[in-house]
Image (cartoon, each protein chain N blue to C red):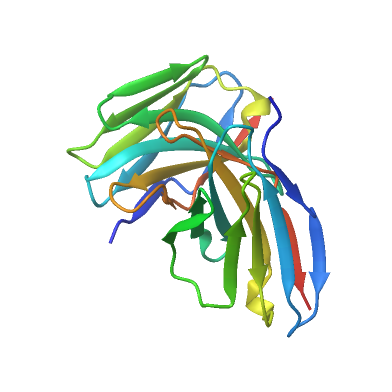
Length: 113
Length: 112
């Protein structure tokens, strides 16, 4: 059974700091991995999608990497800003059986000015 | 391009009642998935519909059901509501490119 773990559960940093969020999964037979951002009481915003054949994806100040063999992904946020404060969720796609996403519990990030 | 829309945004029901939630996917997306989010369990997959057929199903009781229409709009129904059904219900539509999922704002269901 695929399980997704995100460490740490919460993180507080001062503005301007570079930071790394971690995601691990137990079954390396994944199709894709997707990172999301969720603001309190809101839906999910897709940040980055990494297909299983890729090692990393970049969008602006965000860079996500994927190492299937070790069951790990990281989300790197450069020069953090108060507007980055949110919960960040990692999710993997099951390889068989459609497009069900299996989510971690998320990392809640707080960036102080 | 308009995003995923969900209606209603908020619902308050009492135990034993039933509820129907609606989701309109991004234009051109044929797959719609539903998820339940609670503080204790996090985000859990309910089911996925593609071309009006349920293609995938999570581990939820039969009280949770759904359907998809020919225009790809989807509805989710929960019968005989229980207090534990209080949650944020999220709908996602899937792009044909890499199966990237895009989520709506959710429907907040409160069961009293």
